Length: 129
Ligand code: MN
Image (cartoon, rainbow, N blue to C red; front, side, top):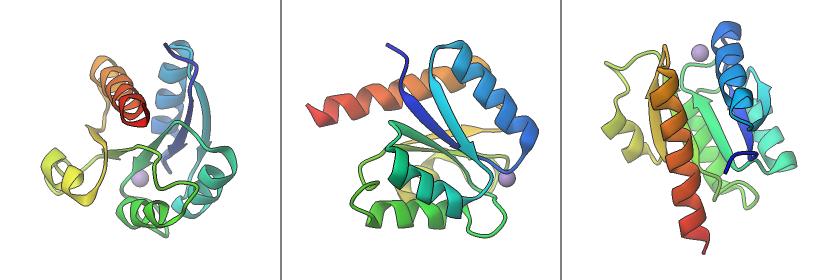
């Protein structure tokens, strides 16, 4: 089942467009922003089913933003997938240990990316039941 609202927080326009196009082609709804600060506001306002969080952002970084989201009542249960270009610095193990629900590296592989999105959305629904 697609159709969920997904918030994309990504400062690189090309990456943002690719992620948006891939998700919309699968039937997901998307909203997007270039900064973590704006992303936190949007998450509170729009209650997305999932957040895709770039790690390296201007201003607040994605790891700090995750911590903020986890302190807000409106956003603390929203699953967040870390998206990073630095697989050496930020690997799946360290990102899950930071509290992210999923992990993908850039440039994304469309198939792996969509599978990770679905996996995280489905495991969140299981949690909610
Ligand atoms: Mn970035």
